[in-house]
Amino acid sequence: MTQMNWLVVYPEILLLVAACVVALVDLYVTQPARCLTFWMTQAALAGVALLHGLALQTGLGAEGAKASVYAMQGLVVSDPMGHLLALTAAIAMMITIAYARPYIGSRELLKGEFFTLAMFVVLGISVMISANNFLVIYVGLELMSLSLYALIALRRDHAVSTEAAMKYFVLGALASGFLLYGMSMLYGATGSLDIPEVFDAIATGQVNATVLSFGLVFIVAGLAFKLGLVPFHMWVPDVYQGAPTSMTLMVGGAPKLAAFAITIRLLVEGLSGVAHDWQQMLIVLAVLSLVIGNVAAIAQTNLKRMLGYSAIAQLGFMLLGLTPTVVAGSTQLAANGYSSALFYLVTYVLTTLGTFGLIMYISRQGFESEEIADLAGLAKRSPWLAGVMTVFMFSLAGVPPMVGFYAKFAIIQALVSTGDATYLTLAIAAVLLSLIGAFYYLRVVKVMYFDEPRESQAFAGAGYAGVGVVLAVNGFAALALGLLPDGLMALCRDVIVAALAG
Image (tube, rainbow, N blue to C red; front, side, top):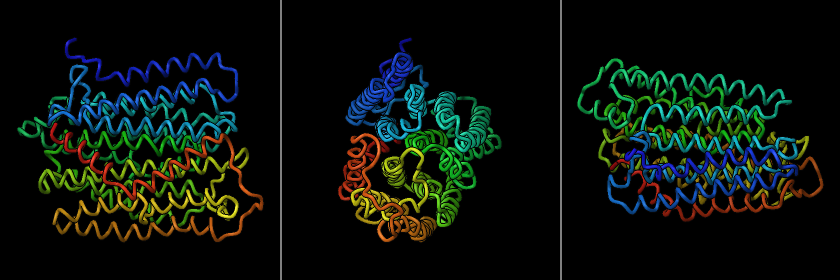
């Protein structure tokens, strides 16, 4: 028991207890707005974010491997990268719930199950982020995935939502099976489930090379499913379009951070000895995702479906940052790529929160505002909403001075700095494909400012006034981080360097 170190998992314990308490308290809540359980959930998530923030500060103050602390008999690891991702996930879920509250309230979905399942999603994300063992990764993955399946199917009287939940469940189960089968093959090849021991076995050559290669293929395929990369992307546009917008944001926001975390844990920390193999697979996945995602998005008229294809392309761009491995050069080159990918993902989640938050904000009962045409003339009805949406679209397109431009620039810079012709070619391809992708983002801006509105009255917005404030802050953050990105970029680099040292 001396190796349990319960202090390391206090945030997860707090989240589990809070989820159970909210589920019980909600049984006695009668008001439709559910103010009590809403604020209890937000307080719990804020407490988790605070604990991870304090742990992040402490970890960055340590030196080298001391920044990583192991607990639960080595099953979990506490390091700066994990704390930054868990902190971001908790804040992202707080914002998601704030955006979703009036939206689901008008559709009779504002129930205790929503808050409880949302906290279980964050708990699953936290478990995945801190995992140091294959089985812990899988437990966290299933906890997060099962909660998301239930959330998407929460609107039981809506056939499209139920269909989206079934598609996500079937393909998500397939992805989980890929990962589990890959992990079992890695266990057979190395004789261990612990990530550091797998790394040591590969480094010393005490592995079955054939079984290891097959296991690696299944691992990468499972990760590609969870990230929604081509050719494992078929669930993304259907789920994005079919799920209620609040649940779409649940899928497209915080869970991306968990997928990034297990990618780093499995490939970088555990399988860096065979980096040359998975590096080639990631390059193919990234390029295919950029091509298919950007080209398919052009043909979409449904805004949520377009953003689904956009997510495929955006994560493909992020994946390029993971391709400069230690094998390709020095540790510094790898750190540049990984930190750029982390910065890209954090800022992409920020922008995604605002985009779907605005869609929910302008929706009302009986009107989902899911078509691009529904934004026609928004600048005439509500100039500030059109301005905020423009910020998000420009950021996704990579237009300066939005944060999306700097995120893309950091990835390109990491690729070019390797000095390798392959990475230079990838950088050029990424820039060209981003120019193609800019078309469908700018089309949304054109519709808002130059098309005639379908309704003549001024737009007042629906729901609680506080949502408008959160939306404005969200938009300001996307602009401010583009103007002053150095602080977040330095933090991302520090946590990646600590992870590589540990």
